[in-house]
Image 1: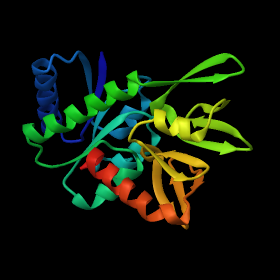
Image 2: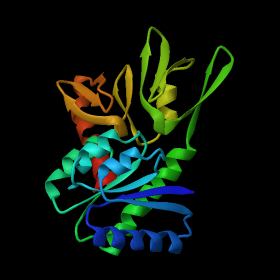
Image 3: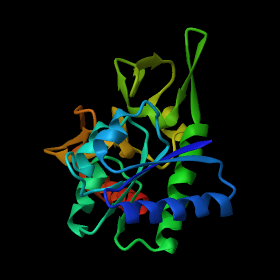
Length: 232
């Protein structure tokens, strides 16, 4: 069952969004628990880890962008706003869509389709790694980057690192379009990139990953294309 949150400070819009989301889940036979909030503080107090969050950017108290930055990693955020200029910031918190008010049913369904599909894909895919005969299964969605150093491959996730047997070339072939070989020693998850600065990719956790000079232009093209496909 999907856990869906809607955070909107105007009650009539909150009720309208709730009706539309409920209609979407019924028509698409999606089992879901939908909860509503009038402010970001109440959403952040919840102990539930939501799969999909519809989040207004302009909220009383903590604004939607700050709320998004405090949410647990992995939540699929759909921003709802009257202001187009915040779209770039939405990339930084890995939003899956950015809807302008008034929200039409057609656009909302498109955004929910993307969020649900991404939830299913990311939750299902896993990578099996071997070290000294032991097996470790890692969810692909949790991988931040992979590195080869001193003939050993390390995979760094949101929950820590793991050193394994094999080569970076082999690992690259086993990963999907979310990942980019930005350097001979690094593969980065584009979904974990918050920005680029002086030949480095800045990750959402603050780490910096080298981008080789010959890969910098391609990296930016891939990143922009990825963001366009996932967010707009």
